[in-house]
Length: 325
Image 1 (spheres, rainbow, N blue to C red):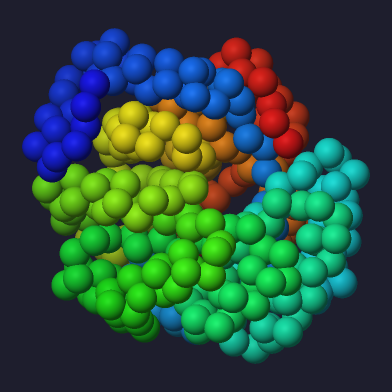
Image 2: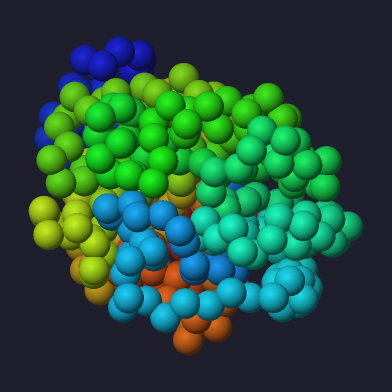
């Protein structure tokens, strides 16, 4: 199956769900078997700081959301979490935070250097940085940087993310690639007001960026955000189609399987949602290294529930996949 044009993408988005599962999803799953050995990538995740200076319309951690209890983990505590992850067998770690200038970039570099010494594959998502800072992270031992473009239409991006702008975001994405870091990027699927044509444009930009990982999820409203007043959750069915199309268009990338199902109260750890994503071609699940009391406040979206290693292993068994740490 060739998915190359906007029309190709829109044809799949309009496809009845039964037809999708019998055709597109089957091909995506077969591609993952043949190209990647049908492995499920297990990654330790640590949201080490939920303080953010930005005012994104959709994010629960936006600076003005007073409902969120803020925290900032000291570097020693981050490194202790890394040690625990290593003891559990993880070889990949994803460090994510709000865009918090007061954390101190030197502290980030020290954390990366220490985790690199433990032979972790290190992914980071800490917001927009300078060109030189991406180079410094690469030199310190970071492997991958996550900077989502979120939406590919300049005017929509500038409305949704008033603390930055589209051109600055795309320049940062270019700097990441120039630094030698692998680029993880992608979009929000089916946010209020998004058209099928806009979603198709997002998918094609994801392909054109040559990414290593697509951390794609459907729009999930967060309390205390302006966008939550404009509409409900995005379609999980559309999101599954996006996952399969990404696998067909870019067979070797990683794709997030931490996805919601029909019961949104179960969050991103919904077993059926995760299993559907794996069967649509996704291949990456996360174990949250935060204690529950803090994890509830890393609230980019509501019910951002993730589970541990037992959940990952259970999903692998149900999807007949092997786990790669």
